[in-house]
Amino acid sequence: MSQEHERILRRIDSYRDEMVEALKDIIRIPAISPDYGGEGEKRKADRIKKIVESWGFDSIEEINAPDDRAEGKVRPNLLLSYGKQERKVWIISHMDVVPPGDLAKWSITSPFEPIVKEGKIYGRGSEDNGQSLISSLFAAKALIDERIDLKRSIGIILVSDEETGSKYGLDYVLKTRPDLIKPSDLVLVPDGGIGDGSFIEVAEKSILWLKFIIEGKQVHASLPDKGFNAHRVGASLASNLDRILSNTYTMEDKLFEPPRSTFELTMARSSSDSPNIIPGRYEFVLDARVLPNYRLDDVMEKINTYVKFIGDMFEANINGEKYPKIRIEVLQRSDAPQPTSPESDVVKILRSAIKLVRGIDTRVGGIGGGTVAALLRKRGIPAAVWSTIDETAHQPNEYAKIDNLVSDSKVFSLLPIL
Ligand SMILES: [Zn+2]
Image 1 (cartoon, rainbow, N blue to C red):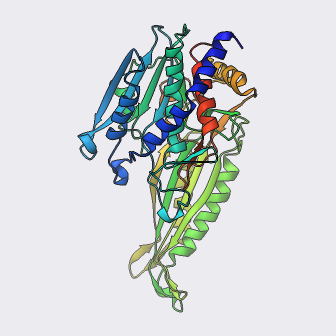
Image 2 (cartoon, helix red, strand yellow; image 1 turned 60 degrees about the vertical axis):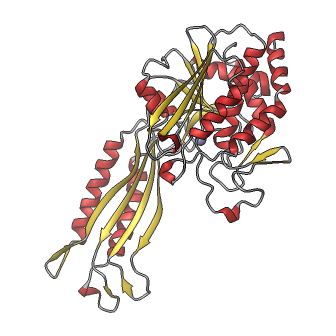
Image 3 (tube, rainbow, N blue to C red; image 1 turned 90 degrees about the horizontal axis):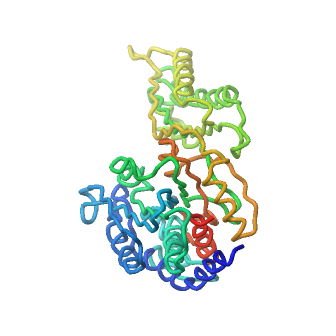
């Protein structure tokens, strides 16, 4: 490690208490999406601007997506940059948090009253995504304070609306400023990872959530011929789809864990609320995570064909009505972009930064999906997802480890200079 590197890392150590206070500060401001009935991110963005205004960034910009439902009628996105170099390192975190869920399960503290206990900061949004947000800001502060010569400029983007689709967040930023991030830039999305920091995510599977709704005719169970049992059709459809999809999409890719496409039956509900009532309606949900080598259109076609087959097989006419009626509702669909190459600069530089700071080797791979990195990969911009977290996001008693807050900031600070 060079002397310059050591200076930077020492500088970040000296921020430790300030970083903890800053993270607690932003946890106190909820920033929940109006989609969840929340207030939006305006107050949090204003608070962050206040924290960093005197630090010496070259520019602090706000890209506001209009949203009448939110406080201030906008969903703010903050853009902070430092350095004169053409090529940039971008670190993208999000300001919004998910709702606290069942308050009774928050046994350590209330969601928006952060406390420090045994080296951890507890509160909603502490890990997701407050830790990385604060780490990225203080990484830039260290570069500014130490007047380090950069190889690449540093750009920090703090987006809104990550938890509910990014329409007012990164998607809005990329649409209104299409030239902001260039394919030659390095992009890190520190919004995923594992407890020892040894995993870098570069790829994701496509996601398809389908709800199957089968309509029959409710009737007393002692007289089944007078009705039509929706559960029978649903159970048969579900178990056969389960088998057929797993047997059709068998390709494996070692980048992913597990290495194959997965098709999991999750929720199921029957309209019957009594042992002796044949249900007139049955629903189940399929969660499919498909390797990027397959097209979701093909998967959908396969499913539609099979739904038709089952429908024909069970077809019956009850009092002039044809049953079953089967509908498919798409709850979520996200077609995976091409993975970021494990040989791309962002991955290579990130790996050496992690090695320098943590002394560990990293594994590069894919996950089941869903960060804003996909929006960048779709535009041909290589993006890596990495942070060091215990994966407590979206849970009660969510926390961030202070050691990770500081140590990840050190990794971020090396990206513009390695
Ligand atoms: Zn997140």
